[in-house]
Length: 327
Image 1 (cartoon, rainbow, N blue to C red):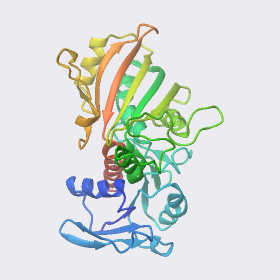
Image 2 (image 1 turned 120 degrees about the vertical axis):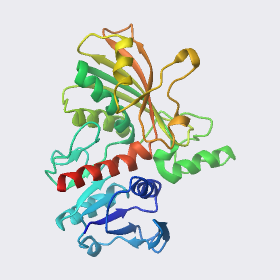
Image 3 (image 1 turned 90 degrees about the vertical axis):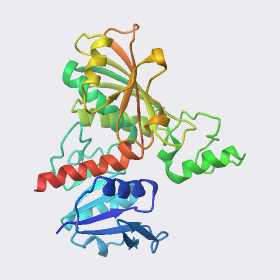
Image 4 (image 1 turned 180 degrees about the horizontal axis):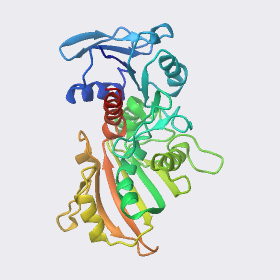
């Protein structure tokens, strides 16, 4: 008998987790949905059954759960993930709380496998997830010397508050989530600023890329930007490879790779678009071209749905991985 819990079931990512569980027909015998006390008591229809969302408490972590997917923020995860773990559950956590702990797996299923050194597995940052998928292909074939990211991140990465700032800003209302209006604007500011001038989001991408790809000395830099798009992140990847190659060879490599979808026909204005990524499971790559300012360096444009591959889908794929390991 498999008992599964979804923590944060009423949030944007939690709702998507339930959709993906249903769509992928993930097997379980019992499901419990948890939320903050504010959302407790809400009814959710799922697979023909009405579930009453419960407030998460310390006592309820001892519910003989086999698996827990958490999408409820870092402070909630810091408190409750170890309790679920102590009671025998494997926890897949969407927050940033555990990602850079040495003993915690940080997993993108197309790239790496969980070791289950501990029973907490971290889901990476949304922009990191979509970026390391094509980078893994390049790493295996050519090796990596340097990666420079520029992200164009949708407001749904900030949850409902981000979406509200965008829609309310169109009506002329002041933002309540972002420090400046996001409507008709671009903010080079995601998360808090660190002492060196980078933001925490940028540092996450740097650190997580190295950890997931197992390249601790890889030169990585990032600039993370919030744009007035509702869903799907776009990432510009500037990558320097170890081995020499060409644009045509890169396109052929990605075309043959089941982990990504190549969309690169600029003669017909075909390239990855956020609007075409929304609602899709895949990671899209295109606009591949040579960077003549650096040796053996290339530009790659990458898009993916941040609520799916960037969060809920990746978490469910990790769940499927560990279920196979346990069988």
